[in-house]
Image 1: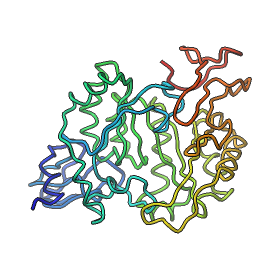
Image 2: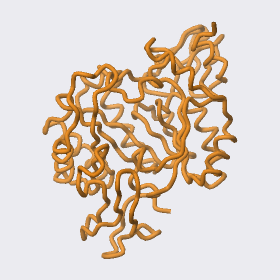
Image 3: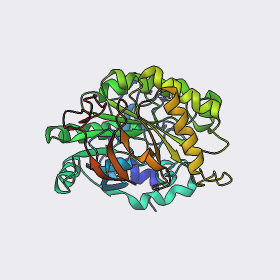
Image 4: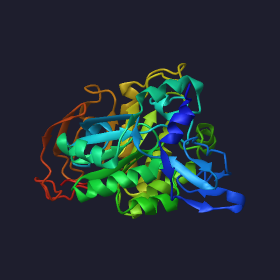
Length: 352
């Protein structure tokens, strides 16, 4: 019987995000683990491996692909109401015990995710772009698993998509290297980053480091990518006032125009002993973000229960500009140039 690893290894090709090392080893640059991978070995993500001195990377398949509103990613300031073709592969460089896509993300890392191989479908970049165009999508998004570890695949897709007039985005944990962000700059329009907590100890328990994620948010913003940040607010993990204040102030120090999404957790994977996030907790987190100086704060995953926190308001005159219900845009009054029609304030984002 073919194992999942054998099945995935067939769907790979030589990568280019690496530096050569000694004795056939390679230093992978796709994420901040910077794994030194010896011949016959795999990186922490398990998806990138060394075959006879050559870094091999995932290519030529999807484990999921579908068309849905860009608000579901979530992006609120990136072509509101536009459809996005979202694709994902398998694997992740983190091991969050509350992952809501763990069957895909923990492939080859958790035996319980072995069934993820049943979702694999062969695909080419051209086919995915054509599927997006046929569906009327204006955006292609890499999501479901961690896109950084499959960047070579994404770049091949995005290069064609950009030529066809489509926008391209990542939905990522932000554990990036400067090298991968600079490589993505020519083809990546938007970068959604998960900011999971504000203590390095907790970040290390998930498989990452806090400062790397903060540096990614800052550099992606400086490179001109449209950045939005999401925090899954988990009771008794990252929902203290002190931690939420630190998150909000840190984002303000980078740019007060970065939209911050505080979203609701529900018990899943190995984090089953925590309570669900209430609307009251999200309201408290949003209040902190607004008081800290963020101009655009949203609450998600509880449609209809968070009042106006689904909508976009002008930060100057407070007029509602984009009204939403769940993931659907009911009204968009922002001009195509990106201004408030009431007072003329420039609204940060990608609007056309």
